[in-house]
Image (cartoon, rainbow, N blue to C red; front, side, top):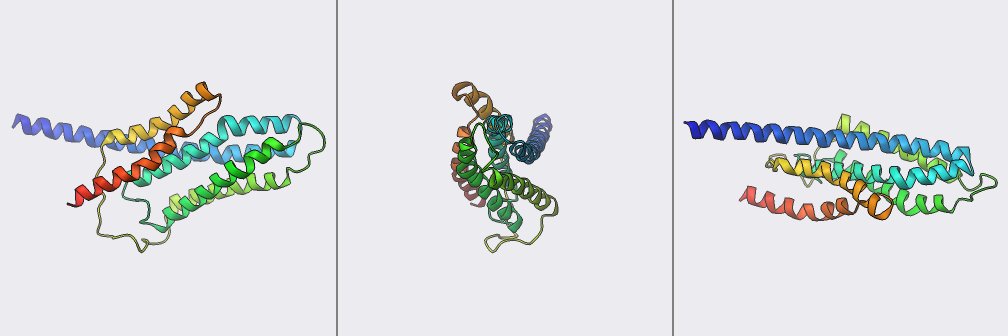
Length: 220
């Protein structure tokens, strides 16, 4: 009887730990997404202010915080999908968020950041018009993603089996997913001078393999 009661207590503690970990990961996803949208609007205002102070502040904001919030928002969103019943491909609204996020990251990192670095230090505020529009569109796209998260429109995708139930993952995975963006900010800012999503990228690429193996074992 005592062994059974102890096992029940441990199971309850594990469930509570998992719930708290998931809630914390949801909170971090919300905070980084809101921060990403807010800083995109700040970037828009700084670009409107023009050179030299506006452009210099925009570059600092982009390198030191905005890019990290963007990648952290994407990472936490992917991990929430992986660790919960939402999955990667089960719901159209999740796929829509993935598509918007990946497009934003590509445009922001590959197109906008190099152009931001190329803006003149002084002189007339020329060449910033497309970047101002892109920053405003980025903030608007994040607002659309927020609506998708709240409304959760549309049904299952053709690749989803509604009868399938995702088995629970160990609670420590939620806490690890919370810690990784923090480590990416602290460690790489100290080493490289700016945050870099290196750990996040490794986990995002490797975790689907672990997830697939765990799902297969649960189904066996």
